[in-house]
Length: 177
Image 1 (cartoon, helix red, strand yellow):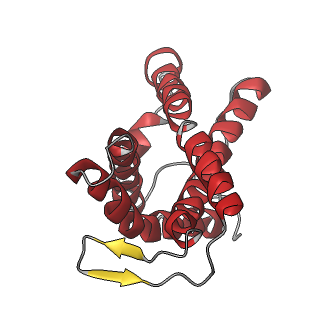
Image 2 (spheres, one colour):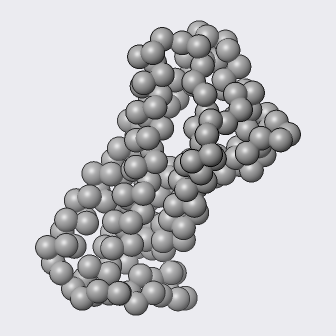
Image 3 (cartoon, rainbow, N blue to C red):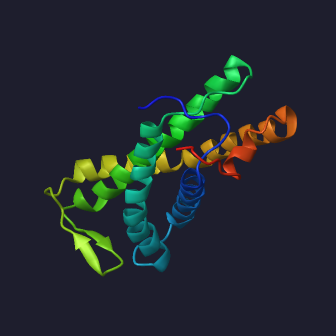
């Protein structure tokens, strides 16, 4: 990690990737219950395989760029903020990696909308597949409470603290990572 970010804002790219990642995570969450063979399921699996590359890059970029300095508020609130941010980062990595391993653990290729596929780098393992299914399901279901806590934190900063923290996600600052 390169250290803490500036506290006055984010770059256009950071803001855009934040909101794009948020939309992807929400879209993937709402398509995860599709029946096998359905368009919804194809969007979740194939779209998730493609989105996973971006989401993993986003996690790497966030870790490489460093975390923002925490605002002047109670230590407990800063701890909660760190838990939520790290929860997002870990959940993204786990859900993406386990998602890639789901078809591969059955010895099947990872399919991209029927246009291309990546063959399984491993043999079929029912035990590994069942573990990956559970891991994928549990990590995926961490997103709603994390999003709710993230929104509550943003609302606290916008309406109670009125400290400008939320404005950072809408107004880019030149020279920021």
